Image 1 (cartoon, rainbow, N blue to C red):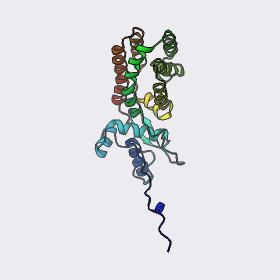
Image 2: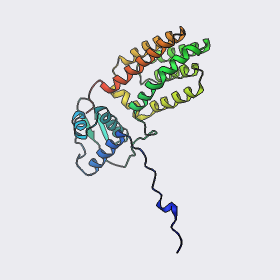
Image 3: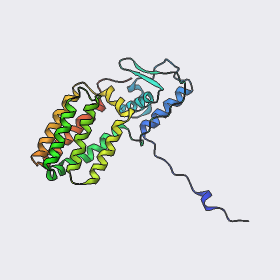
Image 4: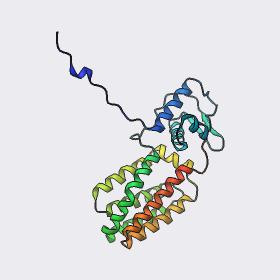
Length: 241
């Protein structure tokens, strides 16, 4: 009798599943079971959060993921309505990183990067930041392509100015998540109209601190900026359901 194959007893790798995806998957299953018929509305955001024992932010991420997947439509002021399930749409999983997680990671590293940029920046870096700010100013809302390109370019140039190429790679990767349908829908639903002007004003403060080689102020203004955007995501301009 041959000895048992050791590989047969090896357990599979457990893949971590983000909370918003777990919620979205659970709701998808309930929709498929007919608990929420086509045309009906999901329970309100607050009610779902209470039933599931999770934050309202996680529920928002899940609902937006379901909309991007074509399973529901979000009707601000009315609720989240179930769509006909004509075909199976995969839930969006861009590296399994949701908008809130991406912003929290940026909050951790970008203030440090801004401080380094204030020390190591060159005049060429400052000029590139100014060009990015000018490009962003051409857009009226965060949905405009020029606004988004300028916003991204400004933060990437700060990472370049830090003098550490690894920072640039990390910032670029985190900003890649903003260019996903899930993140874009998150912004369009939750960002207030004045956020565009607020962001540009905050960028000007960050730029001034870096130009003045004030590392402490550069870090502080960057953290204030990211905190403000994160707070806008968490609070939202209205409940989505």
